Each structure stands twice: as structure tokens, then as C-alpha cells.
Amino acid sequence: MLHSVKTVRRRNEAVTRYASSEWRESESLPGVRYEIVKVSLARRAEITRRVRTLLAEIEYHSAGGGVEDRLAAAEAASRVDRAYVEWGLLGVEGLEIDGEPCGVAALVERGPEELSREVAAAIRRQCRLSEEERKN
Image (cartoon, rainbow, N blue to C red):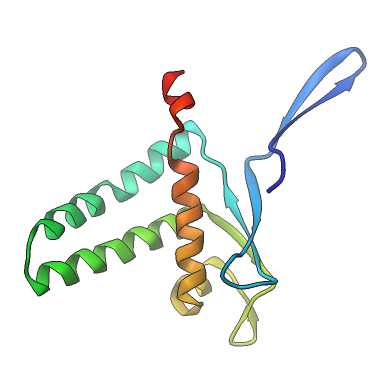
């Protein structure tokens, strides 16, 4: 992971540089890396809006005890992961799917599930506020 904020000096003034995305090495597929967004105020609001209904659906079905409820909760959880990946994945390097360079749509539709879930988890971690951020 690269440092996201860097201060440089220009003619007696400090300029802070911020990268709005970061590259990560895949843990599930050696040699593959992916770029994900960093969360901003607007991005946090957007992803929250996208997954709110799905999260409520998961909670509802998780409370049920039947097979249908468990299947519905699992299906909704997969849709949440897909929403996170489509929202926050910018690129993938080091992976081809069916002879073509891997893009976001290809990863979600035909790519290795373990990489899709890894990317979704990384994006979810980006979206969580740390205790220190909540205090501010």
C-alpha cells in the first residue's frame, strides 16, 4: 500500500498531495494486484445508499430459520459484494480472463470468486470509520 498523503515544498510553500486510490497486492492470487478507491465523504454517502436496502434484506432473512431464508440472505450478501466491487474497483493487473485483460465487469461476471470477495472485503474495510475518525 502506498502512502496517500505526501507534503512537498515548492517555492517556500508546502503542497500536500493526496492519491484518491490505492493499489493492493492480491492475497488470493499471487502476481495479481488491484486498484481501489479511497473513501471520501461523497463516496461514503454513495455506497451507503447503494447497499442500505440489501443490508436490511440480509438482516431480515438472517433472522429466519428456514433454508429459503438462509439462501435469500446468501444471495443478498453476494449482491452487496458485487455492489462494493463495481463501485470501488478501478483496475486489475496481472490477470486475464478467457484470454482478455481483466476489467471490473469481467471480474464480477466471470472471474475468480475468491478475488472478487477479497476486493469487496478491502473496499468494505476502506469504508469503515476508525475510532479516531469517529471522534473527529
